[in-house]
Amino acid sequence: MAGRKMNLLILLTALLFYPPLLKAQAPPHDASNAIGCRDCHSYAIQNGIFKIIVPRGEAQETTCKNCHNPSGQASGMSNVGNHLVNGGSTIVDCGSCHDPHSPDLSVDPHTGLEAENLKLIRNKTRHVAGALDLAVFQQSPEHFAFTQNNQPWNGICQTCHTQTSHHTNNITADHEHEIGSNCTSCHPHAAGFAASGGGSCTGCHSNPQDNGDGVPAGGRRAVVGEFPVDNAHAHYGGVSLDSGSCLVCHSVASHMDGTVDLMDPDNGSMYTFVSPGDIASTPDLSDFCAHCHDADGAQRLAAPFDPFGNGNTPPDVATRFLGTLRWNEWYGDWCFGNEGTLRQVNSHHDIGDADQAWSGAKLECLNCHGSHNASQDTPLADPSNQTQSFTGDMNSFCLTCHDGGNGPLDPDFPQGVLGLTVTGPTIAMRGLDTGNCDYSLSPWWVDYTWTYTHHGPDSKRGWTGYSGAPGATITCTVCHDPHGSYTLTNTLGNPYMIRDYVDGTPFVDDGVRPGAQWTGPPWNTYGTAGPVVVSISGLNVDWGSNSALCSKCHATWLSSYEWHAYCNACQSCHGHGQAWGENDWVSNSNDTSCDEIAGFGGASAPRPAMTIPGSQPASVGHTENSGLSCMECHESH
Image 1 (cartoon, rainbow, N blue to C red):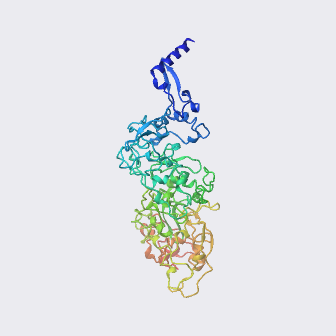
Image 2: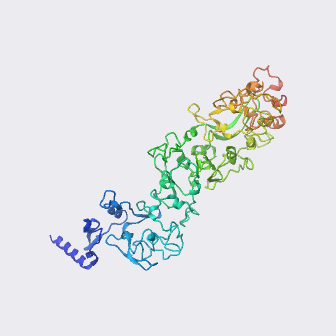
Image 3: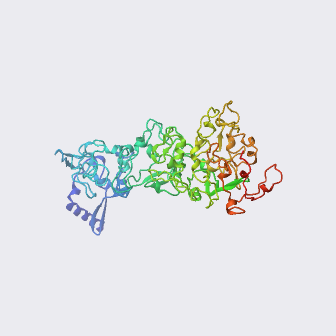
């Protein structure tokens, strides 16, 4: 009993010496709404001193939301939350800006008008160093921010700001951004005033953004201009960018902290980076893309196969990268010996970390596709500037990287503006032998030389009067699938991303060469279409059998010449994309035998015994390692 009397005495004494506690409270936080002091405050006596405890930070937000919630007493004002700044590391809580006890008067320094601030906004903001007094919010939206030539800049959204890109309380920032608008339409109160789903991402990101913290250097680029115009975007279609579509991929929980935060399409985990090149290992951005562009879509979302609600299903490309082929490039046949570089080759572009570790090469989805500008009509981005769509033909796109560069040691891959770089294999694309034990003219697997004549105008298709094919140039993707060639029946995949199914019927060829002028009827019955499996067995790479690639267009070549019937290693003679007359073995002058240079057995490409099927017992010219190649005695055809 004595203790209670003492506490009561202390309380009465405190009330005498703290007159503000005796001040009548004004609506709405008063008896008119059955609200008393103890609904928001707690009391304590510590060391004989009476204290009124005011919750701060997250605890204060929780207290306010006891009423300010969708089903609470203040449900009409439930879209509120603390102001999160510095990437969420600093909390400006409700009472820093609002006086819950009564409205504050302010004087508009621009007009001299004295009036109450709206929304119980304080005229002197608390707990924020450098804030201007008096804060003015007599009119909405006019007093969210004052314009460039209308200082002091003490509108309610300006009075504290010193580091923002727009509307600071000093001269350092832009003071025209969306002037006269309601700031909370783009920066909703409930989202801590960060640009969020309730606002407009494009309202800010139509212009470069830089808050001056140097992260990233130069700030964020304007992205709105990257989106296709009058084109159903592969991601967004007719859905407005301001409707929350950006938030399907992007998280703004720590908005403006200098990083980009992407939410994994399957599990919502974060991919956080300053620039795309920062993520160099799992999980990288190609993983992020693959988790939506796979067989089960974006599992995190209610409609995994319609992530943006526009009916556009993400194509499954991740499955194409499942091929497990890992091959040290080295092959040949009984005719010409072995060749190659021993460089590591995968069955697809080197997207995954394991593939990159194996080959030393590296490519990411964003080297070829823009994160914003991909559309159904223009799915590719310019490899030299991924913020822009690529508008050329497919061959031009492929040759942006595969252009020969300045030689095998300097392939001159494009350097993308997003910091994404293409890396070649660890072993350069060059011959294995260090001396002259190689072709005098660079064959296709040694350099990029032959990428320029991909079955082009120098081939039979360019001959005067030739018919039976749609044109001289064949598109790279007729034979190659840039996403790989995995199938359930060919889980290894094909080397060099050779397609698992090729239709050769538009490119028919009967294997007959009548001369430089074609005057006869078109051939049109020999092309085939079907699955392609380019098998590798030891050093034999099967290009020409019925199940392989070359026969899909050149269906009768193996039986057209006796020479062809002996082996299927087409590319031993015919380099990548070479036209007729460009084959490596036009005559023996194109080759210097390893045996001739290094002596019996060769340097690193020994020729096996040449037992020609159906031939008589080998003569002296056909003995193993004779030092002679077939072409020294025989014409190629």
